[in-house]
Amino acid sequence: MTAAVDGFDRWIRHEFVDFNTELEEAYFSARSEVLFGRPELEKIKRAIMLDGAELIARITEDGGIPADEKERYRLLGAVGFYLGACRRHEAGGPENPDAERLSAAWSLANILGSSLGVAPRFVFAHQSLHNPSVRDSYRTFTSLEDERVFITYNGLAVLAYQRAAGALRRIPTMGVSNPMATYLFEDARAALDDVLRFNRTLSENLDVDRFFFNIRPYFKPYQVGGIEYRGANAGDFAAVNEIDLLLGLCKARDPFYQNLLAEKYAYVPPEDQVLLRTIVVAESLLDRFLSEAETGPVTPRFRLNAELFLAICRAHGAAYAYHHHKLVKPFLEAPAKAAPKERLSDMTASGPPLEMVIRGLGYLSDLRAARDRPGVVSARASLGRLRELLSAADA
Ligand code: HEM
Image (cartoon, rainbow, N blue to C red):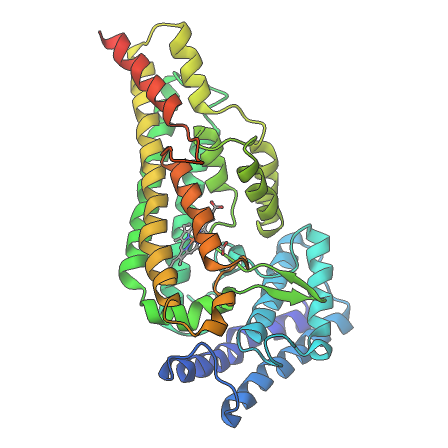
């Protein structure tokens, strides 16, 4: 790390956190997403914008852009925290970020983003898995306990999804009836149960109002060099898609799913881009089970693995249904109903109106739960066929 990068990192971990926390406490007392026209608060907003701009200008003047890819990715995250906070506090006004002040940050973010092949903004990976902790503390926007709870349990759920994907990814080369695959199926099943457990802990420990007023607003879309990039969310990793496609619950040739993957590509970390590229051409485990069951005897090992596979599909559907009904709806949809009208266009991380985002997530939830409904053709029939073949072999 150069001295300038180091100085910026120190500021992001200390003064920046204090400034944001003070603003958040004022917004929270007023139960308002943001406040304008209060001189003491405007002064803090201005200090965030100016102090950060000065420290970032030093990095570009030094010409010290890190050679190491991981360090460049982390720096992109830190610059993104700064830009995300300027956007969140609407410093310069919501439609009018102070372009001149932000130009050094925009330029650095663009250079870092292009060098890495990712969107030039912070994403959830910068808040979780690419966020080294120093003396027990990773980078956050505020020192609010709810932010720590939110990032930690989201991050743990991402790790659990990655563990499930890592196990499933290894099965195709050994075959679905391999005795060693049993161990991997069991591991994937346990990992998806962990996703549900972490989501449940999150829902039980996160305060709805704190999330809505003080955490969610940092996840909004923001501009870099006049182009708007959509906001961050915990789905911006390859693992959940690897699980969808490897299980065969979603199909890479489904236009809805293709759009989802294409849209997400720039928002996942570079190592996940490789995984997304690989997964779209993989044969699903469901297809492998069906073709073996249609053509050969159902051996005890095949049956054991097939039953584990069916349990994994149920666990994946259950974890995502929980996300939809116990996280998205109570933490976003319900409080949004009480928000002032002029704020409604600004509710989602991706940018489209909230109802549209929730409809898309509902569609995904049905695919992952293999639930057919008008307009959704899920893997329900194929899973039913596998169950039939297992029962027929019983008779
Ligand atoms: C209070 C907690 C949470 C809320 C309110 C929430 C809300 C949302 C919303 C609104 C989206 C759509 C983003 C957009 O287009 O604007 C989304 C996407 C997503 N979230 Fe969450 N989320 C929460 C926690 C989590 C957790 C803990 C996980 C587990 C890793 C998770 C996984 C995902 C996934 C995988 C997607 C993207 C859909 C996909 O590509 O499959 N979320 N979330």
